[in-house]
Length: 261
Image 1: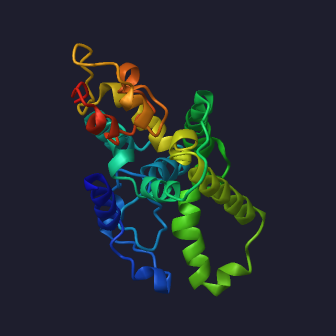
Image 2: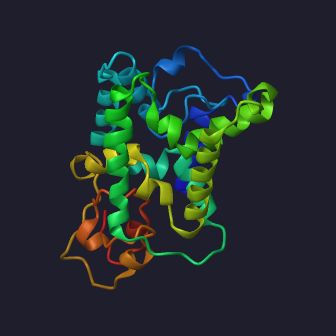
């Protein structure tokens, strides 16, 4: 319950302008010069901060430059917190967890599919924005379902002039969003595990972050409770700081021997 309250609080703090949804306005003030720690679309009417992934692409597309500020911010947050950002502070992570509450048979996700997000990070976030002729933010432009849900659909709903220019690209984005919504119903945090480039960065820093989950083998009684409760199909006794762990802390709470801390 405490984690859920923190998730809602973080979502509200980074998206306090909910009234903008009714008019389809986008905040363009000084706070947009700063990034939120989680995935949060710049064009979302409620957002007051930029998205780190969008910022990396936008600067890279502007003459092939590298955003040292954005990269430094993400690395700093990753080294301090790791993927606890995903588990506690990301608005799109919260949306996925709410979708996961819909009653449905849960599907096991093969671990090899989690590598896709690293491909998307390298190709669509780091390479294509520089390589393309017009410096497009390719992940935002062609893939990001968070942008479609948080910005695309609300802006189309409030701006009739946008509806007449919808084409194949928008259809593709809607298809990806529907896949992610469906995937999140049947697979816990489907987008985080398979497609999120920001989660990929934080995941790479998970083992080196200041915030760690520590396992005490001498206290473990081998009951397997932590493995059974892990929504990401991890074994906390062997991989408590895995790149896939979003540090929801369910394993810590359920451990009867307090072997995880």
